[in-house]
Length: 221
Image 1: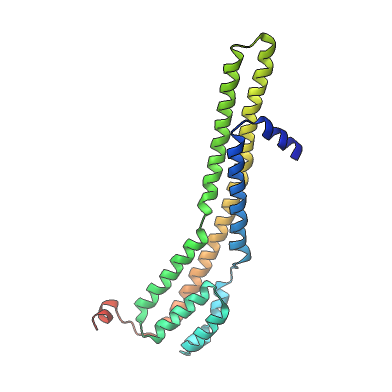
Image 2: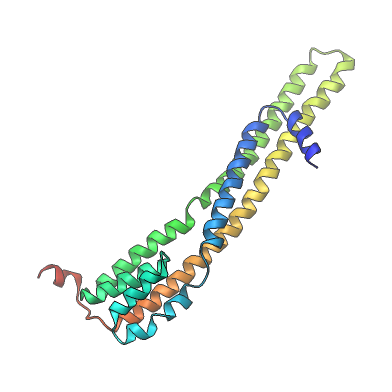
C-alpha cells in the first residue's frame, strides 16, 4: 500500500506537496484535539457537581471552595469556587449568573478551539487536488500539440495520471479530516452541554442562598 502511495506521490506533480502539508496539519490537529477532548476531559460534570450539593444546601461555602480547589483545574471546580465566593460576598443572583456565564463562554471557546480548521483543511485539500488535476491536464494537452504521434499517447497518459493522482491524494486527505471534524465536534458539543447542565444545577442550588440584589442597586451603594 505504501509503495503505491509513494508511486502516486511521485507521479502527482508539484501540488502533491501542498496537499501533504495539509495532511500533516490535519493529523496534528486531530491528535491534539483527541487528547484535549477525550483524554483530558470526561463527560462527568453533572456527577462532579453532585459532590457539592449538601454543602451548598447547608450554606457551607467555605467547604465548597476547599473541595473545589482539591478537584484541580476542571471547569466545574472553577464554577463552584466562583459561585461560592459570590455567595460569601453577598453578590446576589445577577452577579452569580454573570460570573458563571463568563466561565461557560471561556470553556466553550476552549473546547471548540481549532476545530474549524479541520473543516477548512478538508476543503483546501480537495481544492488543491482539483487544481493539480487541472494543471496536469493543461500540461498534457499543451505538450501533445508539438509531439510526434508515437509520443502523444505516452504524454497524454502521464498528464492524465498526474491529474488523477492529485485528485486522489486530495480526497485521501479531505475524507479523514472531515470525519475527524464531525467526531470531534460531536464530542465538543457533548462536553459543552454537560457543563452547561452542571452549571445550571449549581446556579439553582446557590440561588437559594443569596439575596436577589440587582446590579444597579448594588453599584449605587
